[in-house]
Structure formats: structure tokens, C-alpha cells
Image (cartoon, rainbow, N blue to C red; front, side, top):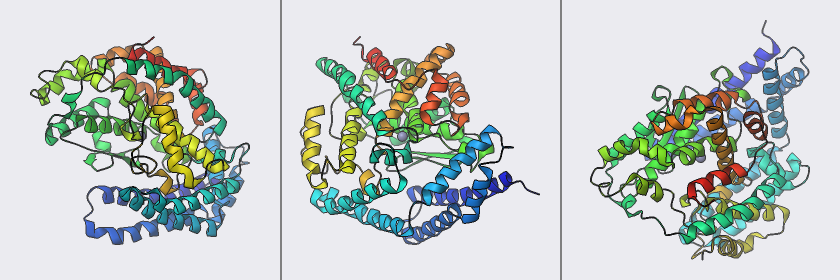
Length: 494
Ligand SMILES: [Zn+2]
């Protein structure tokens, strides 16, 4: 006879099969689906979402979880799986059907309004829909419950174990420590970077991108790369993790950073424990840890001089004309150019965190009621002036630039900055614990780094909450000083 734990695994794996089948349809929709397929595809996805929802709130599954939570025969890992599943089950059951439907309708309408508002650069079109989203998110925080701040309940959905107070402490560091560094860097002469915007033929960029992925250790027998307008990573199980990239023939940055960034996400997914398929321990620890993996490869490795020295011959082989008057040092400086800008996704790795800080302050204000939706354009523009000394010319390039709020994603943004800070701490620890890592990167060999990440981060899945995972791996709590040490070292202003 099957044990309760076996029955639990069977149920979750069935749910995973449904959800990952739906993910395959989503991947197809973003890559190869012909345009006429869109209408029926929406219905297919909705049917699968309905089946997944029924499985996840199934009451006999709830009874099984409650039996298992007191089962003393379970191993530590099994207990952790059950604990996480039970929390998820209980959280889902806090929502009434009416609330779920209201939110889902509000999100669909908000997305349409946001899209139109952004095209017309007119916040007033989006404002009433966003107001409703904010009201519903406040209600959601009450439904889910929190200890100190209603925003805690919203962050918890993306980054369990991290609170509003934690994020506030972190952003105080950004204001106090990062701002002076940026000011110093901006006083230096800006590096030349016009060569990044020369003509780089698509196919050659594609080939270089594939070389980069292979060198990182991305397993092409357990994944593939395609093109899409918004690059993403999607997984169906650890043996099928796909990435997309974006290629611009007149902007060399796009392919390089989207390839390395998504490659970092994909390596994490390929390294998750296969035996835990469908169970919490088979999933990524949190969004910030996920982002730490993409940013570690993108910034700590990919924006380093030693990485490009190792790969310079390859770049010259593909692009001898475009790079004939460029040294590897100039290439390195061009990709680390710091310049305050309007758009978050184009920001350099230092000013980026002010974009996130602004969004966090606004979200927190909206949820606690100290900022009104109607005032957002003025609030947004004033913060861009204060933190980045930038005049925002219009709503499209200002308050309407991100899709997140129209999706109802409030509490998500801080995970981007947390990801960079965790990346710096993890990379410093990796280099300290294995002194062959830096030398190997300089020789174009990424294996020792990947091996370290596999052992210390990837194979753990969701066993620890993010701050605990950092503490266990690094021997100390998450600390912003690692990011500052990294930034100071790179930008040469000690
Ligand atoms: Zn990412």
C-alpha cells in the first residue's frame, strides 16, 4: 500500500504535470505560435489553469497534508516539503472565489488600460484601474495576514522570510553608501562606447551567444535557445529548461546581457534536484535567489575584465571589422558605463538600484495609504529628480514604463535589488572557498564556479528560506557590504 507521503507526491506531481504542460503552451505562444492560434490558445491555457486550481485546493489533499504535518516518520526534507505545501494550501484557501474572480477581472482590465495609457503616454487612462488594483491588494494583505506592515504580506508571496523592515534597512544603505559612489563615478570622464552601436550581423551574434551559453555550462541536451521580444527563461523540469534572447544588429549590449542573464537563470533550474520534481524542494528558493543567479553570471562574471580577456579572441573572430580599433579594456569599460537614465531595464548596475528604491517607496506608500494613485506621476517625477537628477519628459517613459502594477504584482520589485546583493555575497564566498574559481574564469573555464553553485545553491531547492540559505552558505547573514566592496573594487574608487 502507498504511504501518505507517496500519495502526497503523486498528487503534487499530477499538479506539476498540468502546470508544466501549460508552460509549454506559453513558451510556444511566445516563440513559434502562428498569430491565428492566439484565440484558441487563451482558452486552452484557461482550461489548464482551472484544472490546476482545482487540484491545488482539493479538500482531500488538504486532509492528507494535515495528517502528514504530524507524521514523525518523515525525514527532514520530507517534512520541509509538507510544511511548504501546507502553507501554500492554507494561503490559497484564505481567498474567497469572489475575491479571486474580482482580482482576475481587475488585472485583465488594468493590463488593457495600461497598454493604451502607455501608448498614449497618459496616466489618467490607467489611474482608475490601478486604484482598484491597489484597493484589492490592500484587501489581499488583510486576507493573508501580516505582523507589522501590510506590505509584508505582499512581499511574502515573492520573497518569503523578508519583511518591509528588511527592505527598508537595505534601501537606507543604497541611499547612504551607494549614492556617494555613483557621484564619484560620474565625476570621471565617461568611457567611449560608440562601437557597441555599430552593425553586428544577427547570425554572428547568435553564434557568439550560443558559445557563451555553452561556456557557462548550459546543457543544450536539457534546453534550447530561441528569440523573443522579451527574453525569458522557462522550465518544464530540470531536464528541459529553455531560454530566449533578443538580438539587435545595432546594439551589441542586448544579445550579450540577455543571453548571459537568462543563462544564469537557466543554470539554476537545470541544477535543481530532479528527484524532487513537482515538490517544493524541486523548486527555486525564491525570486531574489533566482535573480542572484542571473546577476552573478551577468555582472560578477560577465561584466568583469578577466571574463572578456578570456573571450576576446572569440569576439575578434566574429567581429574583426567592428572591433578593429577597440581594446578589451575599452570593451570592459563600455559595458560598465554608469549613467543615470529614465528606464529601469536599461540602467547600469549601480543606478539600477535607485529605480527599484523609487518603486518600493511608491508601493509601500500606496499600500499604507500615504500616497494616492492620482498623484503618482508627480510623485514619480519628483523621486527621479531627487535620486537620479533626471527630468521625466512624459508618463510613458516615467510612471507607465513597467508592466508589473498592471499585472497586480506589488511587492515584486525589491527582489531585483536583493538578487544583486545576494549575488555579490555568494560570488565573494565562492571565490574565497575555492581559490581556483577566479583563475579558471580568467582562462575561460566556468566549471569550478558552476560546480560550487550547484553544490551550495542549486541542489538545495527550497529547503531553506532565502536569508537562511545565504547565512548557511556564506557563514553570515545577508550583508550589503559585499555589494559595496564589489562595486568599489570595479569602479576603482576606494
Ligand atoms: Zn532575471
